[in-house]
Length: 173
Image (cartoon, rainbow, N blue to C red; front, side, top):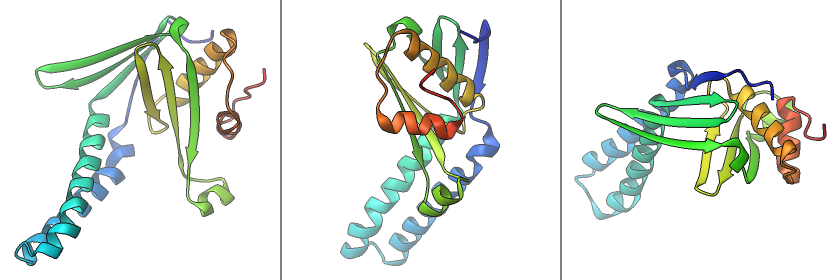
């Protein structure tokens, strides 16, 4: 495996700025409509769930801001670092059971082969870990996971193989 002894990965704030702004704008819009309608029942039914969705999206983005990944030869460790609390999840490479890579893009982005993002899902006996391609060092993580999957003889589904090709990795070798 080509992985260095240990590499620290994180989501750069600049990469998350668009998601931060979308979450804030959507939440402000939904709450603004709710306030302007004096909490009319129809507005509650429409804007309430919309506000909840944008709040959850904002929370997901906030979690990405405080997420760090330590990539090592033996495995990886994801830490969510909050003030006074750190949540850590470790995955040893020899425990890897499944690797899935998905590419998400609009039809136009897909046609022009620009834009969109990848989502890598790694599964072991304890559960799964998800990473998006906005993670600084995502390519190294995907390559290490692919090498591990090859070494363990894991079967990759067609969508994962196609996404690996799109990322520039050859799942066959």
